Amino acid sequence: MSRSVSEAEQRKQRKQRGALIEASVAYDGDSACIAEARAFARDFLTEVQAVVGLPVSGRVMGMVPLVVSELVTNAVKYAGGPCLLSLEVDQGAVRATVWDSDPTLPVARAADVGRVGQHGLEIVMGVCQAFEVHREPVGKRITAVVVLADAPASDVTQPVA
Image (cartoon, rainbow, N blue to C red; front, side):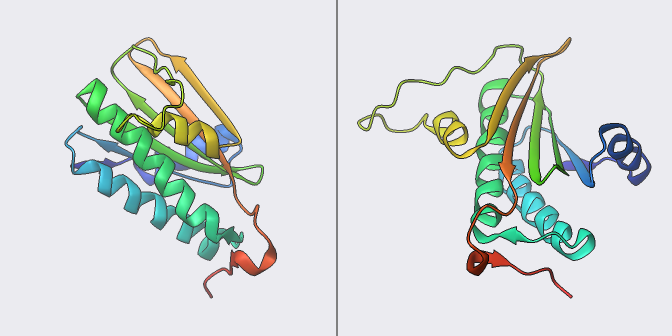
């Protein structure tokens, strides 16, 4: 189950951070929120194109929902409680931030092609321009940054008219 942050709060956060567009949603930690988070990311990118008019590459249209899915999956799996997803566009990139209530910082495991599962953090770190983890007074905040239009022009999805 999700709860959107109010439009007024979103405008306030955007102004403080200097972001072009930002959206946030809170999840209760149920496993269904993983699919909801992927859909939220796709809808956000569609809005980036339609409202802000920024081109978004096909790679980014697939990559950001994947990154969001992996981050929210880890929050659900390891924190076992509520989490907050924030997406924003700033300086030509999408910044995906997930907060959860568990203060334990994630550790990327060494690559192992024989290991089944537990590759999410490796994937996120491999496809992102930047990756940060910060312990908060309650829990932790993980941020991954994906460049918006990093593919050849033929792969860029044009804004919706």
